Image 1 (cartoon, rainbow, N blue to C red):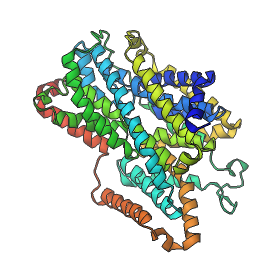
Image 2: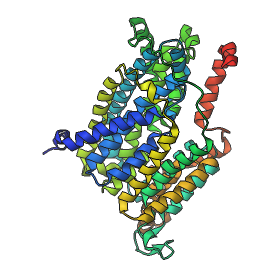
Image 3: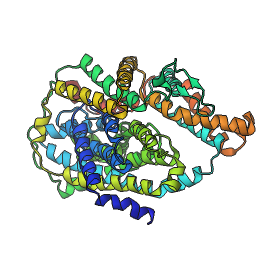
Image 4: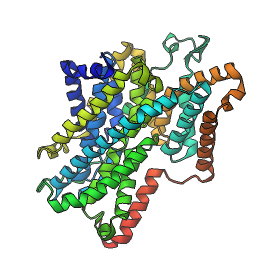
Length: 513
């Protein structure tokens, strides 16, 4: 049986289909409730899916990933509050459209371009993932070490406002990675005599603590009642021919931006959405002034760009083993626990899994694209749910999900400890993403570095043009981040530029808002 047939046979498994349905529903709900991020949801799901077959677990997590792309647009349009960071740019035109009585139209345009953006990104994945993986198969220990070092550097430099804070987060993750037994000699390291730490810190406990518990604690400390009420009058839903024409060019520009940004590890849909909106506005000519006033083209550009990053993130994750974003980092951890090592070898050892992942995302996108066009006026009622109820549910799921992975109370204790650590990091402006990536990529970097040194000594690290190229790129990024270090993160810089442009174009409206 070939790999394609092996992958497709899962779609005849009722349990697999139920997993997909549950994931899609959870993804929509996760995006719908501001403050519940996709990373948090996938981290929670990972604790419950480890007992499932890898295909079934991947179905849940990937469908959450896709579903969140649709759900997060709803509060951005109706309440002016992004469901996830990826829908920040949606608020620029989505909420003004809702105030103008065009909420339904904005939701439909968003659903259409989001579907198009994800499908375009999956086409990119199908076209380039295999060649990239084939090229990466030629990598030896020195090249793999240089690649992982490059990936860590670019992720740290993008995800943190301060390079120092990003480096501190990455180093902390690397230090966590050395706890346990030496992978080559088997000698215990930093276990302090504890049997619980002999196998290292529990990955699930770390991610649920950093992304779940820490987020809930932070929201409890900073919560304020939402003053903006959801727009109740959704108006007409389907765009006319003129509105469709005005949406095509911005959507194409946004999709192009998203495809490019998605390949860059850690750049993410939030940055892509803002850049896509800004580029579409710059290319709009006489229609430029309409952007930011409630224009269908603005919604089309931002949502197409943010959703088109998914395929790129998946490409770097599966082909190189470098997480494309924080959701992919969590998924890599789960795949490793299942015995599936993301990277070039995945394409040769488990081609059916690669095909299945693409099939899951494409199928979920088509289904959710159709669901997003449904005229569900009752969805506005969900926006009135008190966040206190969500906090309680999340905390319970955090503890239950963590406990089920090892049936040990000590794992739950680890989760709570990392929850407090995550809160401290969050309040200090230190990103949690590099911590997880350091924990994931640390063993890969250490193992390949030691093998390279054993084989050829220090000179082995610069024995090929591939490793030299990655090391030079790493050095370039470090110099760029230190010598030309921006005072704000890339996302904040783009958002500030957009807001300044809007303020200069509409000074009166800006003052009123």
